[in-house]
Image (cartoon, rainbow, N blue to C red; front, top):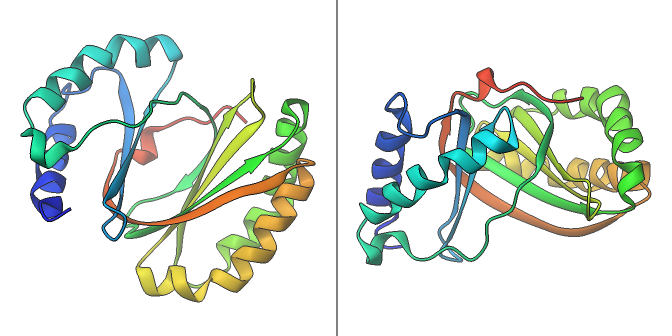
Length: 194
């Protein structure tokens, strides 16, 4: 991650160029400098648009020096269930919930109706993205914060709200990770499905 700032600048430049990632409606790059990891989330209107953009991702990667880009550990595809805000975020918490696939929609409705209004009231809240894999029952909740201090101050409330979200979907909390938001582009253009 010693080259993190250079990589972030390169990625930001690439995603800001119109048409660089064909069909992309939003892009988020999350970085954990201590762990030496990065997570890229690119949003498309359809899964086919995502598949069609794969050559553009490969081309972008080939233009970044290997020592800077590292290597992909995995590529996962999720449905965007919810997107609220995100502009100006500088920190993120990624909560992974696992449960029965048939509980994704009832759980998401409960989050939207009951939990999200309370999250919005937390100081420094900047947005949320909910992603789901209906095959496995996995849901990824990305809460976005104005800065790392706001993220840290929200930990206690987030623990409670995360537990409520897992319970609403008859699921469990599989993991919680914290990141710096390195790039957040065009999130306001993404349309969620719920």
